[in-house]
Length: 500
Ligand SMILES: NC(=O)C1=CN([C@@H]2O[C@H](COP(=O)(O)OP(=O)(O)OC[C@H]3O[C@@H](n4cnc5c(N)ncnc54)[C@H](O)[C@@H]3O)[C@@H](O)[C@H]2O)[C@H](O)CC1
Ligand SMILES: [K+]
Image (cartoon, rainbow, N blue to C red):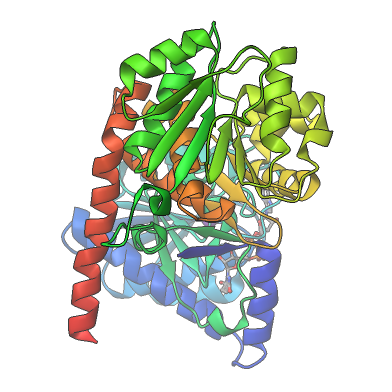
């Protein structure tokens, strides 16, 4: 599990650790780790450090200090290091160390910096770290823009300057890094888009902060975590033990949503799928998924006669008329876990009392649906995804999976999980229906809402890694995605035991 923290949590841990160490030790450790990553990167591109040209962009705080001390280490190994100071304030001890090592300090005249960056073997972004507030001001903003023109790797110190360390927000200019060297712990903003997109490859550098860090605010699942959570059939398994999921989806206008949702459950490993819907979607599901047990409902009829299930999926393509309300009410009135998606969420936004239930509920909105549920402008949700998914889980008393370029899973009192898989190819109609079916199958298999949502997002992302694709392709790719995750573990498991 990859955990991440807010700046406040890191500063508090830093202060506690610093109290036990001589002044400057943390910066020394940080600079050593940063220099090592820079040397490795140069080794990869220039095959050596000696004689390479390194440009440091240096802000007025400790982020700049880290860059200066790391630059001194690279200069000591024969690199030609030029530091560009972004302002009059600078970490004086770091500056002195660079000068002692033979580094040069240049003023920030932009065209000069542009020329330097254009000819460099490595650019180090030490403008702003966790001390950054708001959009980058000048001249930091222009210096950040100049890095985009560099024809070499850009290494960000701690956080790409211009990215909000706590929630990944980017207002105005920001450095787009190839590598981000994060000291002590990952910052939540490095895992959540847009910040995640600016960070490049993450290189955590330990500085001894771990014992002082509180429970993580944000975490990213790994393949190993998912494989440990996934249910695996064994000799005692039967379809009920593997989990029977009930799906209420589709309507005359949206028959495909039902077909795709059932597909996500069937291909996702459900013990059995009981699909219930009106005439048109029933015909579509019958034709495409012989595996599903199909019940045709009269308009507005409840699910009392559908048969035994262990969890429900409610909503994809269901419509939002009175009949949809009636069937939604009958599903949510039960004491089983229910996943609510798409039109089902619109119904909840119109009548929040439907959410007053003791049994577990998993909501799977995209930003538009969450904006209706919370009454908050969609753009604002996109800007502050972490904040709003947490608020939704608390306010709605449910587990919330917020879909998007980085999907988030929130449940009150637990770290927000960030899904590290997936690709923009998944931004096509119907993929959400497949995700709902898959998550429903995992709920029916006995995973709680938090784990079912996290594992479904992970597997759905693996299945949709390579595009172009249609939603149906994602369903077809699910068995392969599950195998890849489980096999990954099997290999790991064996090795660990052997080594242990
Ligand atoms: N995590 C750790 O344990 C350690 C972290 N270290 C490094 O220290 C920085 C945080 O340093 P701090 O001095 O608090 O702030 P920054 O250097 O990040 O930023 C302050 C600097 O930036 C200017 N500034 C702030 N916002 C803006 C803006 N929007 N536009 C322009 N300029 C801005 C501000 O004026 C200051 O000059 C952390 O990230 C690590 O890199 C320690 O080195 C080791 C321990
Ligand atoms: K930085």
